[in-house]
Amino acid sequence: MSANLQERIVRYLSSQWPDHGPIDIVAFSRIHGGASRETFRVRVRLGDGRERGLIFRRDPVSTLIETEREIEFAAYRSFADSALPVPRALFLERGLDWLERPFFVMEEIEGCTAGSILASDPYGANRQRIGEQFYRILGSIAATDARTTALAAHVPIPEPDAAWAFELEKWEKVIDEDELEPQPIARAAIRHLRAYPPPPAQRVSVVHGDYRTGNFLFDAGGTIRAILDWEMAHIGDPLEDLAWALDPLWSSDRQHPGGMLAKADAIAAWEAASGLIARPEALAWWSMFASLKGLAIWVSSAKEFQSGANVDPVMAFSGLYCFPFHNKRLSDLLAEAKGIRS
Amino acid sequence: MKPSPDLVLNHAFAKIATEMAPALPQGYGQGSATTTGVLLLMLAQEFNRAAAIRKAENDAMRLLFADVAPTMPDSLAGRLRDAGRGSDHDLSIAALDRSNSALKALLIALHVHAEAAGDQSLDRRIVQLMQGWATLRQVFLPAM
Image 1: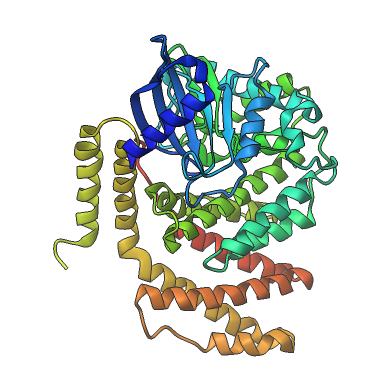
Image 2 (image 1 turned 90 degrees about the horizontal axis):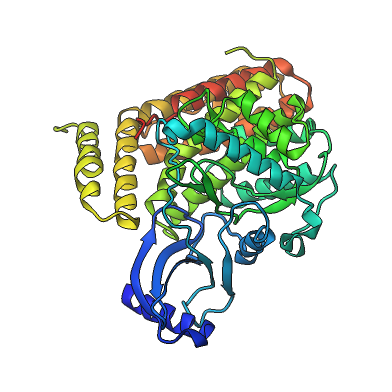
């Protein structure tokens, strides 16, 4: 299958680059993680001897989050000519002819690595430097005029006072459709979030949707070189991304969300770059929402694995580890909101 | 059963994560092998406690339902009373999960009623129960 896939990739690239002469694959491997897409690292040699590193992101038979590849592709395109580090998105194919499933192609960012949510100190001596960049970049996403981006053509643009409800309904629907067991904590959280809505968004902006440790690449010098995994990108309240980035699941170091800055420093860096204020009551709402959204994703992944639709071990990991983590987190936040002391 | 299943799973995790996975080329295969090893580690934690956790949750819900049924409206009282009289005769995980699901569906209905009725005492009691269960169901992993 891999050889067949490589032949198909060569045929596809030859059709896209007819002036580049014969194209050969010199290295090919599948990348672990990214359960929402099958991701392949492909190094090709062009007819003139030059080599190019490419990333192919192919729709899986089943997916962790049923997102449209157009959205992710548009999100990359939205920031292609900005200071924001994203890989260049090259081609998008919606049909099944080339690789049996839709896919898109990006340039590879070479010589970099991603942090792991299971690492005790994923960034080591670069923790401060990477953390400052991480929140500054997130702030710059929030500062971008969403209406001018390529993404705006693919997703709804909610009013500032409706962004929260739009997202809450979206993820409640995921739980409705995918839960294999009743979820009393999630249901209580949904009712609470609906009963006590956040203030209107200060601005609706591009929301990455999965901005966290593990979804960006950095080099040995501690420079963030690429923000990845935009498949859940949408337009909404930028506090959604901030709360998601600060969620405790992304690092075992509870004092430094994501293994980077302390929470207060992270918020300050984000506020400085975005020009917005992370009001505690608004951030508290989005923090509870972040855990609910996480829970919905893990409910979906558990269903995918249980049904046999996708038995990648990452899907089982999500159901067995991430789900109980966010269930506990949600119950703690609910108890706190109701004035219950543990 | 000897060796104990949790011991077997823990050693299998160590074998996969520290010996087998590192011997594979970096990439999807190595990552998947490591993740598979971690799954075994989590299942080792779950093995001993799985039945006890479910039985304790089911007992606590039945006790709550029997306790509050007399003060509930007719639409809920009968279901709560019936559920409160139940018990778990089959202690297999599958059977405990089935009764756990049925009881949690009723718990959601009771919680909705408590909130709508402004019954803060019952609301808090339910949240505290759920918080306790969520605490017991956590899975812990070593930093890797």
